[in-house]
Image (cartoon, rainbow, N blue to C red; front, side, top):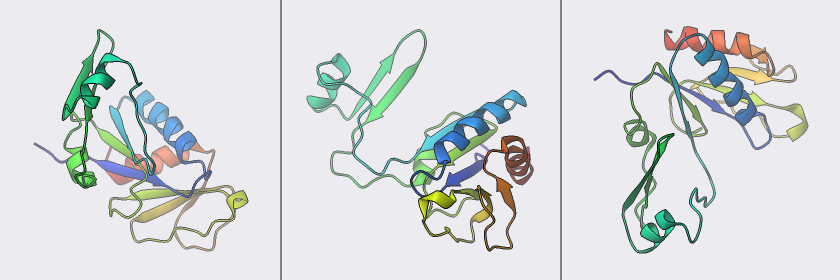
Length: 164
């Protein structure tokens, strides 16, 4: 099995990561490539709702609950005190696609574009795995910089780097 092609989008809160991810998925998919996404959540989240059957299964102690319908299926895995799985293990759970876009996981060494908005007043994330910046200002870096809203150019860059 070939290893998944992975490219990340990172940045501080309110830097435009999710909007950029959404536009990149639409743009790269429109080019005929299959795309999956993996998003890191820093907080306690739950995709299930208390009182629903699947929630009751998890609450009763199920390690995994697979919820399926004619339109989609979702597999929930409870860590039950185990450490958060590494990115590689999570990527292995995905079906093969042309490209996996990863939002977050800024400390991992996969190639990334960093979203940066001047108004957030955050520092620039500088890392060897950051290959370019999608920004609304001019940054003091020798790495390529793209307008945060220029989805086509950013997608061109990612596709070229990923070999698509």
